Structure formats: C-alpha cells, structure tokens
Length: 120
Image 1 (cartoon, helix red, strand yellow):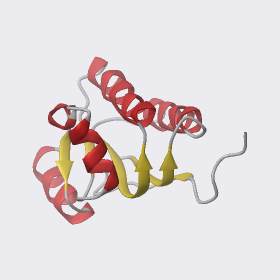
Image 2 (cartoon, rainbow, N blue to C red):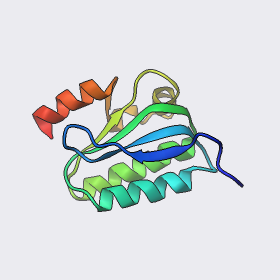
Image 3 (cartoon, rainbow, N blue to C red):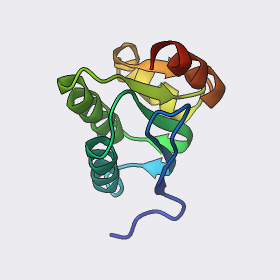
Image 4 (cartoon, rainbow, N blue to C red):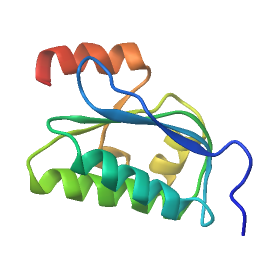
C-alpha cells in the first residue's frame, strides 16, 4: 500500500537537542516508516530527543507503540524523550491508551525548549 498523502518525518532539532517532526497520519501503513526514521535519528544523536507531534492528524495504536519503542531505545542510554504534543489527536491517542504518563509532554515547541534549557 502507498502511504497516505502528507505523511512525513523531518529532522527538527530544538534548543540544541536532536529531534524529528512527524506530519500527517501515523497508522499501520506509516508506522514502519516512522520506526525507520526514529531509529536512524536516535542512533545518530546524543542527549534528550524531541519528537514533535504537533502536526499529527491521526495516531493509531501502532503509532503509540512506535513511540513507546523509541522511549525504550532512549532509556537504554538514559536519554530522555520529549514529546511536543498539544491538545489534539495525538494527545488523545496517548491518553486513551493510558500511556501519556510514560512521556514528558509539552503543549508547544516553546514549552519543550524551555524545559530543555533547564534539563537538556
């Protein structure tokens, strides 16, 4: 199957921390691509890692699993995962699946940047 139009993962560092911006829908058709992009970006970086979900229109349970996997990979090296996740589809998916508390969630890139300045 082809990926839905608009899905993409772009490099998006924040306050000196490496990170990615996820765009569009994360579902069974795009989760594999997200895993590949996250694995590469995590492997090539150090320190806290930012995943910006601000432009995610839909986050399926498989997408939630991808984020939990990324958290585990970073945790092996005692690295933090920082999620930019304003109220909307992605935050609802994390809350409904009961995993929101596993992540440090921020309403905006500015809020995440401020936290990174103190903790990054």
